[in-house]
Image (tube, rainbow, N blue to C red):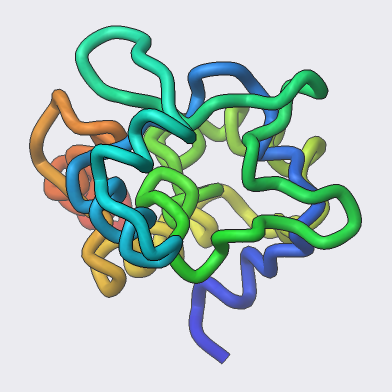
Length: 157
C-alpha cells in the first residue's frame, strides 16, 4: 500500500464531479480524452466542453454533475480523466490549509481521517509521482509543489 492509498481511496461517489465549469481542461487532458473516445480534439471540444475564460471546461448535465459522471457507476472516462480529476483530493487548498482538508474530508467518503500533515505528505508524493505537480501558477491545478515541499520539510525541523 502506498502512502496516498492510506489517506485516500476513491469510492467514485461523484462528490468531486459536481459543479458547473469546475473541470478545466489542459491541452494534454483534451488530447487524452479525445483519444479515449476515438474522436478528434475539435469534435470533443464541440460535443463535451464549454468556454469559461481562456480554457475549456467539461460541461455539466442538468443535475450539475460532469457529463461523464454516471450515478452508481462513477466516471465513464475514468481511465482518461483530466489531471484536475486525477489530483483530487490533493488540491492546493487541501494541502496548505488544515480547515480546507477537514471540509473536504467531511464531504468525500474516500478521504481517511488522518492528521493534516500526513495527508499533505501523501498528497505531495502522489502529485509528484503521477506528474501532476506544477510550479506554474496559471495551470488548472496551480499547486506550486516545490513551495509546498519546502514548507513541509521546514515544518519537520
